[in-house]
Image 1: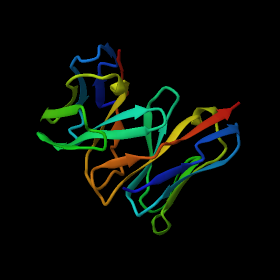
Image 2 (image 1 turned 135 degrees about the vertical axis):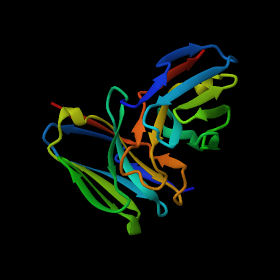
Image 3 (image 1 turned 90 degrees about the vertical axis):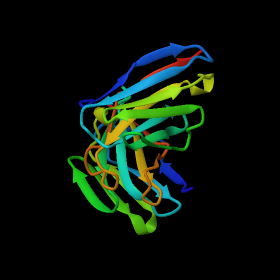
Length: 109
Length: 115
């Protein structure tokens, strides 16, 4: 199956800093989506981004499908951004949606 | 989360006993999914449903069965629980197959401990 690597696995920032999280894929994927799991375990849908760029406030995401990667940008980070960020995709458009192992982000005040 | 509830929220059970987890939605979404989350593995798909009585296996389906007799309910059953099934289980719902622009929503999770 398709291999996905999320980097970095862990990231610690001071409040106000910017960061870039990355998902690399070994093959082309479909239905690329980014999620945030907050420290209480709740999973929140951030972006559905099979290609191109989207922005929502301080967060933006870019997927370059031809080069098999997706990026999530967090600007002016806040402590509430802490948690784990996952990319999720499907293989060949199937319903079998696969999650990366996540990037754990800690934003310190 | 609004529109999707999981029950129970926490459960401790003994090895060898059957366990059923319930996912209930009020969104009338066609697609429902069960995932498990374990340290070092992220979220892994167990089973999913694409309609009433239509289900299929995910990547970690061994030891689990599912049923969907109504649009709103998707049940996950551990026929004979083992310690390796100690995990946090998440249900998710989605309105459409190919477009997940909107509506892909997770429940709050069920923490299951098998002793």
